[in-house]
Figure 1 (cartoon, helix red, strand yellow):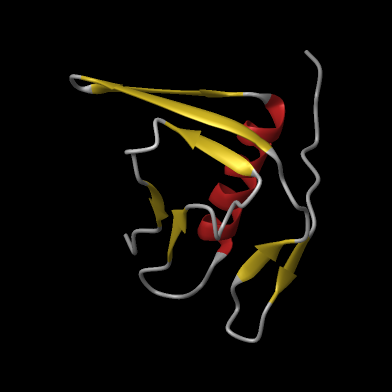
Figure 2: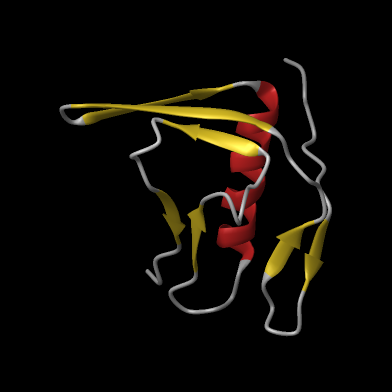
Length: 92
């Protein structure tokens, strides 16, 4: 079995919120079908999503969430256009 380490740099602001240093570019595509959500994308898009998941998971602010849009990920296209992609951290 091969071990792989995922290294990514984050900047922690004064409120304890981590921000990714990297400007990601790529594509994420969502297909919502009945009770199933299919998420796919190119390498850049999936790494951008992974970095945002890490940001949300490591944030110590109660109820912290990310709305992934053209402001949060300006160089990543999320398709279809009518789908909102939000990441949130539960307090449980």
